[in-house]
Every structure is written in structure tokens, then in C-alpha cells.
Amino acid sequence: MALFMIGIGLNDEKDISVKGLELIKSADIVYLENYTSTLDCSISDLESFYGKEIVLADRTVVENGVDKILEEASSKNVAFLVIGDVFSATTHTGMLMDAKENEIAVEIVHNTSILNAVAETGLFLYQFGKTTSIPFNYSNVKVPVDVFNDNYEKGYHTLFLLDLNPSENKFLEVSEAAKYLIENGVSEDLITVGCSRMGSQDQEIKAMVLKDFVDYKFKKTPQCLIIPGKMHFIEEEFLENFK
Ligand SMILES: C[S@@+](CC[C@H](N)C(=O)[O-])C[C@H]1O[C@@H](n2cnc3c(N)ncnc32)[C@H](O)[C@@H]1O
View: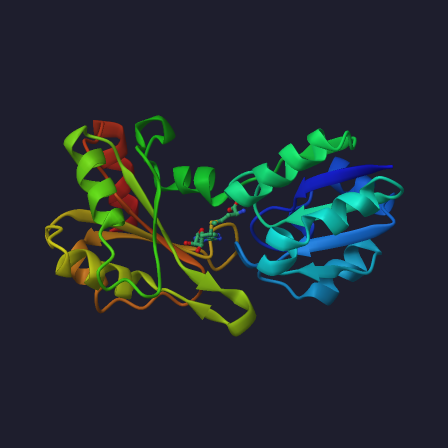
């Protein structure tokens, strides 16, 4: 009996690792958290590739119902699948702590997260400062701009994650995020990088000044935005590919 916490990658059913797939196959119950991100395939695609039925765990299940999942893991093998990597949302760190406190055996299988997939832009991961999120209801929200100013002052890149509600098919888009940042005093002439549906065949990376993103429509979601800080010449050269 154990809890398997498994990252299933960014895009579709085939992003799982062999180790992750083997653990899913040995699980009695398979949960999928489906609120911190979204895949480019359906739940039934996952079910037929994994050969298991999937129980969807929304935010309330994970934040209020962890006890039920942990109780199940004390007598059964329970797989808890996370889109991207397991610990890129703080909620899941809480789950790991609770499992340890309850002396439940845990196996962890990592996978790619948006937090490292953004390296495909050519921006060095080591040069990123604090990551921040822009919510749907951003009026009166200043934290993302404060985080950006702080990072920028130190020469660090800033990754902005954009709010999403997959169950209602709602995604904050880069165009809206650019509007928010400009309205809140970020210079509209800063070179900015937008990314959409990273990890898929349809992924897009685009580099241009912030104000040009206001009218730019990416084909797919989810999306995120980066404002680079001080760039190494290799980063600058690489970004030319996306202009
Ligand atoms: C909480 S984070 C993702 C956590 C996820 N567990 C992971 O490891 O990637 C969710 C946000 O990341 C960004 N994001 C996630 N997947 C993405 C992708 N494939 N392409 C672009 N942005 C993505 C979006 O801004 C989205 O709202």
C-alpha cells in the first residue's frame, strides 16, 4: 500500500515516464488533479493508454479531501497524477507532508513542468527570479507587478503564470496579461516572451515588445508570459528565433 505521486508531463497521455506508467498499472485507484493545469488530450485518451479508470480530483477534493485519499492509501495503492510536475503547485507539497505525518509510504515520479519548459525560449533558468501569477480578477491586484519590479531591479527574468479554470474552459490569455501589466505601470516597450501550449506540436513562442502582445492572439491555451531581465548575449541571440 502506498501513495504514488506522479507527474504526467505537459501535453498528452504519452508524456508519462515508464516508471510512472508502471506505478499507475499497479494502482487500485487513480486520481487526476485537473485544476492546476490542462492537457491537450481527453481523460479517455489517458484511460485507454494507462489501462485504468481515472477519478477526477478538483480543487475541493485535493484541498479538503486529502484525508480520504490518504486513508485509501493506507490500505491500497493510490496513484495521484499531476499535470506537469508534482510539486510545482504548493497544494501537493501539503499532501506529501500529510502522508509523511500519517506514516503512509510515498513514491514520487517527477516530470517536466512549465517551470522548466520555458527554458526552450533560450532564457537561462538560472537567471529567473520569483515566479508570479496573474489572476482573472486582477483589478486592484499589485503583487505580480511588485514581483516583476523586484526581479527586474536585480536583473532577473520574471515568469508570469496566468490563471486558469479548466473545468469551465477559462484561461487568462497573454493579451489580457499584457494589458494588465501596462495598465499597472510596466513599460510597454520591454521585450517580452509569450508561450502557449508548451510541449505540444502546436506550441508557440513569440518575442516582441509588451504592447504588441495586447493584440496578439495565440492559437492555444494554456499560456504564460516572461519579461526577461538582464540577458546574456546568447539569450539575446536565441530570442531572435522567435521574433
Ligand atoms: C500552476 S501552473 C502549472 C503547474 C503544473 N503542475 C506544471 O508542473 O506545469 C499553471 C500555469 O502554468 C502555465 N502553463 C501550464 N502549462 C503550460 C503550457 N503547456 N504552456 C504554456 N503555459 C503553461 C499557465 O500559465 C497555467 O495557468
